[in-house]
Image (cartoon, rainbow, N blue to C red; front, side):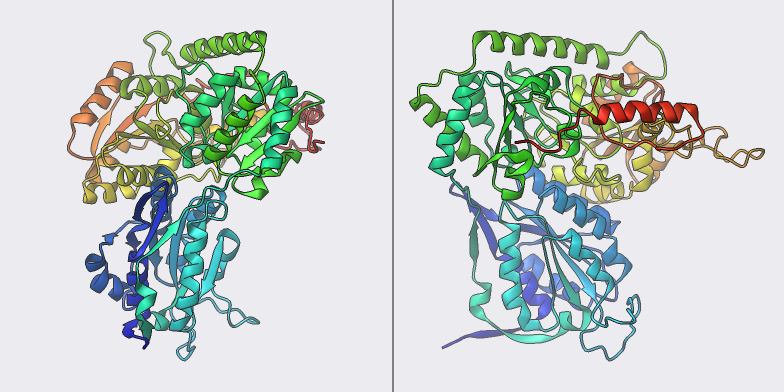
Length: 629
């Protein structure tokens, strides 16, 4: 006999979420660890009531953020640090609260990170239409503002009747827990449906454990890869975030050491090997190391491991110049494994490396030649010396440069603390200069390069691993966009260090502006000049120290190297979140290191420098190889 329980849609949703678990390698844990919510008329009486009545009893912690976009970033950072084996749910009211989450959804989907989004929607019964904050479409009556989630979600559904959850939720969690399909999952909830009751089957709420799969590589393709490696003289590995999510660091270390194959890193993959490991050739691509990029130019076989191969990784497809280069793509996602004309090995990174290692040993493969290994060593030594030079403060001059700030922070907190950053020029500088000693010591959001992620992301990392030291590096531009979650950190008693680099605006884009032949315009934080009516006046002074203090943070101003080191140590002894404000010289920039990124230059211009820049741009595009055999 079927048994039923009568609950509202909101109550049923909370109970179902609380009883979903994941398992990988015999380790089991709850998948949704908590709920972030900003309430409004669209969700306070429905899902909000369910959260109040059921979340604590079901073991789900409730969090109250200050910004809807920020809470999605926090959930994504939490899931990223947990290797996609746990995440949060996020709910908002109808209209602007819902659409505020769209940017965070896009970031999660681009980065292949699971987050569960529960925006509210218009009345399903349509009796009171148009309700407050409802978007009316003149031709499609079933369209709402929440439809904006469709292109940025891996799964989207609108629940217009309570019983639809019985089919929708299992499919949503299948996507969330699948390493090849995961991303933002959006279930939009009409506000009347949230409060409607239904007789739910008891079985619907039984504990379910989702197995997080580790697909094994096909033997026929493994043999092909073995043959390709045996015939290669200059093989190279590009390791991405998927290697870290797979927890394959040890397998990669053994593989690289045994066969003498250098490992290069993407933004998401940095830290997979200790920075000083002899086979770690450094970051690759547009923001890469001279060592990694030289090896990439001449490589005859490239194994891409758990990476989606963004334009920064491939230097806009100009990084690989060997006319005979071949590619092998190891990835759980077929879309990523097939890029660059790769021979795809659809498999979990850890299992693929282990299988390949065994097959190579069985085939008598001893690895690369001594000359190649010696070259790797010399390139790495040169690069490590260059990094030391770039990040070391020059003399006692004030203010510091941004590169020196990175070096000082890294030296003070060490290689085990997690550094968090996102958009602008700083992620590229960190990719080159930060020296992590742990796969979780480097946390960038650079797939979507989303300004405002930084502080919210730091909260997510701290919640994912409370005992880890977390250092957020953020520029004043991103800070001004989204600093609100300092209040959340204060309220939750989360202790982390925020290093705010004050360089008077968007200096990254100002540098790019100059690089593409455009005059300085619209990127710095300046007063409007009364005479010219342009934004060319003096810098606008912002007292970031007082601003942080006003939100309850411990705030310190650091003018020089000694101040900064002391401030970081003081932050460690503080009882709450600390913001360290460091003014820097915006013209102390990363020097050119021979890399390239495809940003089109105006083809027609009255400016001579723009025309010359266009000529150079067209020459650079000749090195692009959009198609590989």
